[in-house]
Length: 366
Image 1 (tube, helix red, strand yellow):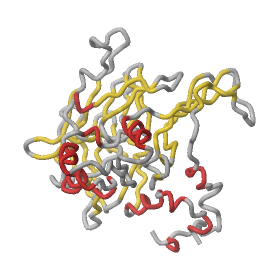
Image 2 (cartoon, one colour):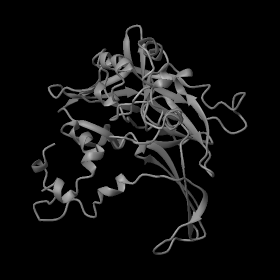
Image 3 (cartoon, rainbow, N blue to C red):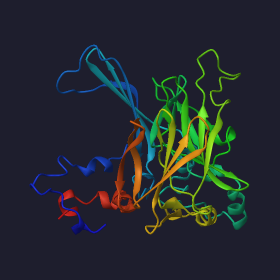
């Protein structure tokens, strides 16, 4: 994106980026806060407001002398704000992922992230790389995007189908769950939907004999005390709907999806994941962003899938756009209404490289 393509003021001269301090994204946590500390506040917090606010995001921008290159890459840091009797306490702890442990042991970034190439052990041979091809644990499990509940348990998410359970009070990492051990998916979105009854739905990508398909995965709500042996809340997970991808070798990049009373909404943008590139990165160790392909000459497809039958009932074509998040979706007077934050192309991803974030807003938009 060229700097002169954006004006940070509108036609009335109003600042479109008030209080925009990009430096907040450049802070890097060096020390965890395990025991709650009392926070300093301004204003008043109602004494009837009691509970916890948990947040997830990039907490460390480097390991040893090596630095992460993109905002999507920083080591996951869980924050907890404990609110009680008008006061707030704060804690933070790093999510104890396989990726974090390997990076810390090597004192450098050894597993590639979205925008950062890992530096593998120089002693590894081509046969080690061939072996790594068959071991998905070499893919980053740095779940630094979101936190969602499954029954009475909390899990952190990224787009790789390995999630981590955290303790809601101590924010300690309790266990790791590979969702692909329960349902045959190789990818899922970072933003599942939690229904009123506690049932969880997520959109994944499954590979079938006829090609890849988008799969809606249902995780039925299980009450505490009614769990399967071992306390497994994932044992009844099933694929309840599937739709073929537009391009078998280029499934669409999915970060979220929509759900209404009667439909699932899958937005297939012309940003795709190259299967050939994914296979190649097993050997080249390139950043995962190198697997993405943008096809601006193709429409964005909005796929409407019936919750009752699990079948595709309508496909809508619109101009090509890039998106990450759906803001809202609902049904009104026989229509499915979709509020979605769109961009004309995926260049906004480049604005989240660490070097780009170091540029001041005045300089960036001058």
